[in-house]
Amino acid sequence: MQNGKTSSPDRRPNGRGLVPGFVTKGSLPPTDANAGQMVPFDPLDELVFSMQDPKAATRDKIAAAARDVFGGGAETTELVANLVEHMMAVSESREKVVSELIILGGHLQQMMTMAINHHTGLVGDTPKSQRRGAQLCFAFFERAMKLTRASAYNYMRCHMKFADKAEAVQMFSFGELRILAADDVTDEQIEAVVKQKQATPDMSREDVAKLVKALRLKEEEIADKETHVANIEGLLADSKLALDQSARENGHLKHTIADHERAILEQEKSIATLSEMLAKNSAGYPALEKALADKNKEYKELADKFMALESAPPKVERVEVPVETLPPSYTSLKEALDGLSSQLDEKLREKQLLDARKAELEASLRESQAALDARIAVKNAVADLTTSWASIAAKMATVQLAVQASADPTEFNSTLQAIAATMRKYVSEIEAALQRTQG
Image (tube, rainbow, N blue to C red):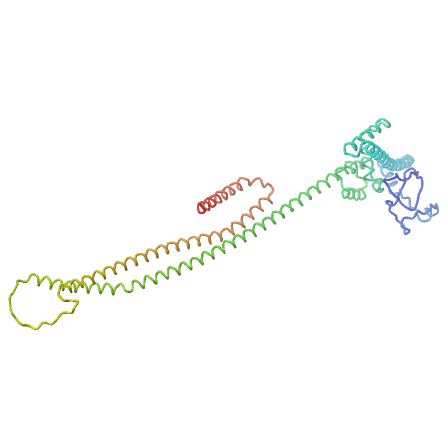
């Protein structure tokens, strides 16, 4: 049933050579120590060194199936033997048919390439001219061999996928190869199916299709998980950047608070200076009040004497009495009274000036104290906000990651929208306050 043998395990169906441009000799894996050198066939080698029939496993399997169906008695021995021989021939023919179909796909692919190259050489190499060349070649297949476009495409696709995979060609039927030749079936999936087929030779076409579908779903799940992990990593990176930005903003706020504290210290020094000035100006106030009271008392005594002299009845008495002369500035009682009155007026003016200066210092002190209290209140509020905002920013990042990692992030859209609306409200109020202060 075989056309020829070599020391290499690969076959060339019907003794045909490799299709030019598609399968090279380098793709045939060498198995002996001569690294792929072809050794002439010697029947004695087969007799001496390979006493076991390579088809024994398949033969035993076929015989077991025949005995299961037709019985294992002596009356069915000849029937079972004939069925085994014919089924072995069918098995070898099936392998040859699959190999021939792969070679057929290679010829179709070569003709397709020739037709496209010819047409693009005439009208120019564009995607449209390439498609037209392929359409002409498919029309040629239809007219020459009644080969439909779908069948020709399947043959060419199987050739492109399995021309250099002799093991798969021998293992699978052409229908199974068509399943594995789909564009969305990867080489890794084909290798997994080959290993499963080796472990379970009884796999049917439906089993192959189910396995390919399961592998595809598994890879899709892995791809989805990798995408999900990539998204989570991106969110983590974004959250890290956001936290770094929050840390920088908190640092800026801390520097601002430090500036406010320095300004408060300067203002406290100014208030202390004003308090010291007020104390110095108030230190002479009691002495001035005492001097003013003394002048008032002296003025009253002199006024009483003056009134008593004026209201006394005239009395004529000639008495020679030595009279001491009054000081030049007090030639009479009236002059002394006038001088004392002017001094009293001067003291009153000094008291008024001192009262005005004291009131001015007290007003300035109250104004500075009020500004200091307001600045301290702002500093404390900003410090509380800075401390609270660090915790809020971390919690917001945690919420965002938790929502993205959940099974259905859209479930929390309403909550996130409410939080976003609240944040926008506070941001708009802060911006409005800044515009008022800048205006």
